Amino acid sequence: GPFVVRAHRDWSPAGVDRFQDLIRRRVYDDLRVYRMMPGFVAQFGLGASPEASAAWQRLGIPDEPVVRENRRGRVSFARGGPRTRSLQIFINLGNNSPRLDTLTAGSVIGYPPIGEVTMGMEAVDLFSGEYGAAPAQRQDSIRTLGNAWLDRTYPNLPGAHHPGMALRAGPAAPRMRGAENPDILRSYHDQPASSSLRDRYPGLRPRMVRPPSAAAGGAVLLAAPAAGAGRQGGAAAG
Image 1 (spheres, rainbow, N blue to C red):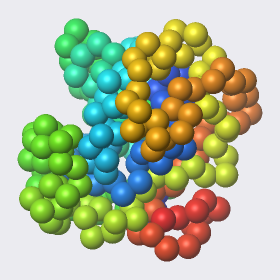
Image 2 (image 1 turned 135 degrees about the vertical axis):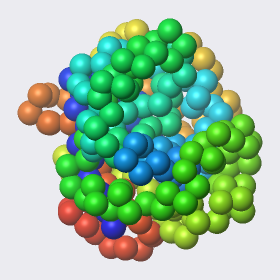
Image 3 (image 1 turned 120 degrees about the vertical axis):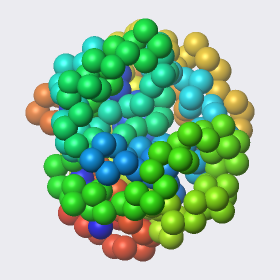
């Protein structure tokens, strides 16, 4: 079933800006949950388009401090060192604080949450944990061969039997196409995108826009289990 994520920009401005950008550009369409460890995390982000995954991973965003705990239901970007938060995210399935708040990855401390599941956490808990972390340990193959390799090698992976599984922007998501911080904008501009990525995601380089007001309350997003599932909770499913 669907679940709803509310993003909190005051927790991680650069993280939420990237998260919204990825969703609006439909990078999380046809997703696979390739790391499902019950009681720990559910992770996704790579796979649907190997070319897009490779390009986005080169566009790491600035590191930010952890200002909220990695409690059950909170969503954070995965990272392995400085400026490596790009497109892989995970949902905390248990209370992983202080472990993930303070764990050092390549000299960077902690994983800053960007939002939290506000509805449907029971649906996340039902993702199959048959393969555990095994697929995530073969990320080179995921990056190179994408969902075709994942579906062939791990046929019961969450999302494999629901090709329309995706994250979509909900009605409360502010219209955000970049960030008001020039340093964040520069992190996109410094590294040129491939021409094929620009073709698939028109307007990849963000423009300076007015940041959302505090009243906007962040973005509400929906993960839908299958295409054609209709509308759930006011946001388009599928």
